[in-house]
Amino acid sequence: MGVQTTLSALADPARREILQLLRQRVMNAGELAEATGLSASRLSYHLKKLREAGLVTDSREGTTIWYEPNLTVLDDTIVWLKQLQRNEAVSKASRYSAKQAGTNTPISGNRQTVAETAEDGNGEKQGK
Image 1 (spheres, helix red, strand yellow):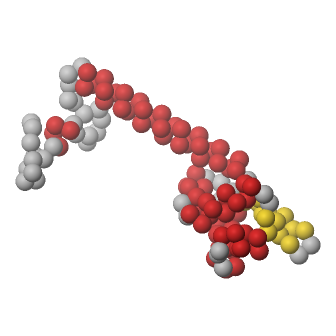
Image 2: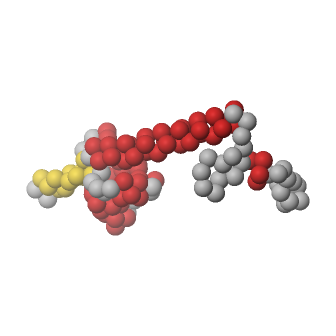
Image 3: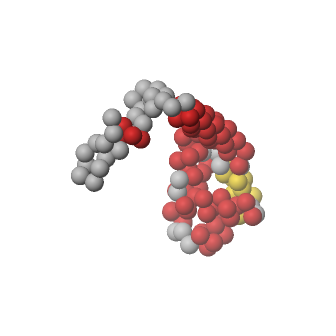
């Protein structure tokens, strides 16, 4: 499963609540519906999205389907988020170094310094 699918599945508060409940113990649909207050159709929809993202697995025992979390899928997403965080830290450090060196030169592309984009109260640009 990809990062996009995982983040999309986690974007919904009901799905996050389902995962929190399943972290506590394996549950069937009836128990999940009771604990979340979701109708059977809404719960089914959310479980489908969680299964598609690989965040939930199910196993059948007679006529009962048991759901449990599969949070190892989060590993790729966590790695991606950490890389994003590191890239932001490097970018901030570069901007800080440029500021300390006394330059207001943008680091890359179309970035502008705060002084270049500051506006006065009338919406007019100030600075350079």
